[in-house]
Length: 164
View 1 (cartoon, rainbow, N blue to C red):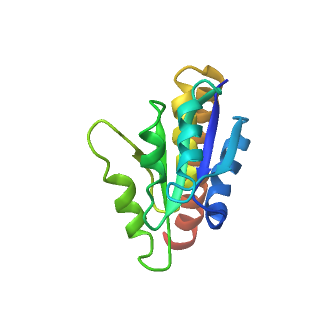
View 2 (spheres, rainbow, N blue to C red):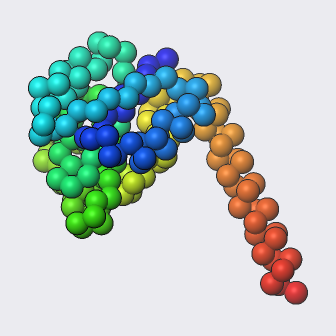
């Protein structure tokens, strides 16, 4: 199975990125995690992206706040799917990171999840791998079934209390 690369722009992104790592772990998907900044370590970020395919990655998740150029910088150096996680910052509450992540020029796509949406980034990466990995596809189906079941249990509880 291909592994997922998780790259964050700084250590301060770890509380967000941990949710992606936890989701990947729960599905048994291998991953590597790194800190590379698009601005402070651009050579290392580029080297990681350039070698990602040959190093066994199938998708890369890139998390960054503020200017949030990391996902785009990674996507510019690989043809692997890149999923951007815009991280919330104190100045603009994540809107700056969101706009930086989604405003990619034609030819360099970055899939983007919600601000601090690391769990969905991991699920999207798993879905990408599941195109070829039938066991992962089955696990995704099971998760969706359980998620729906949990909602229906909550609906029954609310209905019993309020719909008399």
